[in-house]
Amino acid sequence: MAPSALDSLEALQTDFPDLVEDIQELANLYQRKLWHQLTLKVEACFHSSAFNRGDIPVRLFKGFVSDFGHKINFLKLAQFAVHACKFQPNPAAACDLLTSVITKLEELKQPRTAEAVLFLRMHVAQHKLETGDLAECKAITESVTEALGKLHDVDPSVCAAVYYVTSLLAKAQSSYADFYRSSLMYLSFVSSDSLQPDFKLRLAVDVSLAALLGDGVYSFGQLLQHPIVGSLDGTPSQWLHEMLEAFNNGGMHAYDALCAKYATQLNAQPALVAHERRLREKITIMSLLDLISSRPPEARAIALADIGARTKLDTDGVEFLLMKALALNLIQGVIDEVAAIVEVTWVTPRILTPAQLEGIKGRLDGWVGRVAAVAAALESESVGMLAAVNGGGSAAAVGVSA
Image 1 (tube, one colour):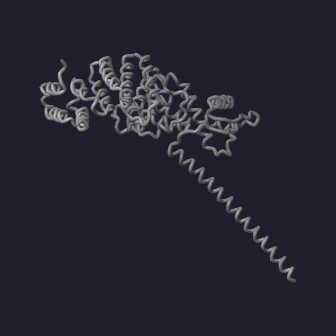
Image 2: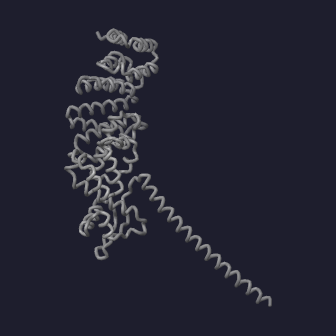
Image 3: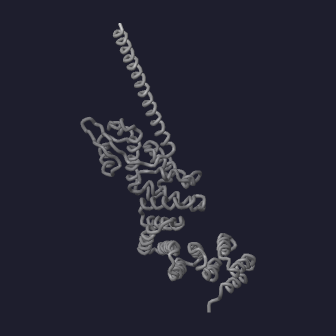
């Protein structure tokens, strides 16, 4: 016969007498059936370093919390289970615990369990990934993502779990673009301040590398405006922040200077070394996009020579660059080889940084000034015309009376 919830607490108290006060409070709230207050107390215990040692969290969850799990918020129950799994001896044991909770929730046959089940399944997927079972992790992730799309008003922690595990899977598959996008989605559902400093720094490094290496990633504004990038500053990884700024601004000369300045750090990143040509191609494309974006719409007939000076390419190189950008649908327009210009009719939108917005503001201010000047000129001309018309009318009136 399994021990009761109170028996489990008593056993914990015997093994860890320093926890007696907290354990007695847990027992008191349980006996009084104050489920909300009990939930808050369990949460406080799981945040306490005194409880987060050895197998205490596992014993507290299995022997105590699981007894009244159906009485409390189901998502809280799921979060408690996930926390306890951090103290399981291996991923297989963690999966077993999570699966048992999923089974109990599904047996309740209540719609309110949906979020909690999805949350738990994503953590099962994470542990599957830890064991190297990428296929099972992918299957669970795809299933949960589909189910998530059918729910409304989903708790942010559930969405965060989905995108975090999705990003881990993408990282394991060396899919840089997918990792980059999933990580940005994950960061949109969590507070940067809630992340542990060491985890935040590792994630900032990984996301920055993925942004540089990811196919189809030609906008860095969203990442640069996220607080997580600031965690790179003042660390040995600060060069990544500088590199992101160079790419975002399309700074070819800045990129070459950074490559020379941080050669040691760059060579320590095998992925960057292996994709050196891809990086050169991307910074060149970013340089082109920035040049086009800096021009007002009426001045986007750009000489190929101007593009060559900006991108450090000869005429053939510029033409190839333009064809590449057209093929990627980053720009739309027509190349006039005879006149040696390109007429750009559209450039892919990008999320702008505050510095880039200042540039847009300057152009708008200039446009407003030109509009005001034209309006003033038109007003002056219209006043002159009215004066002439009025003067002619008076003379005619005098002639008639005479």
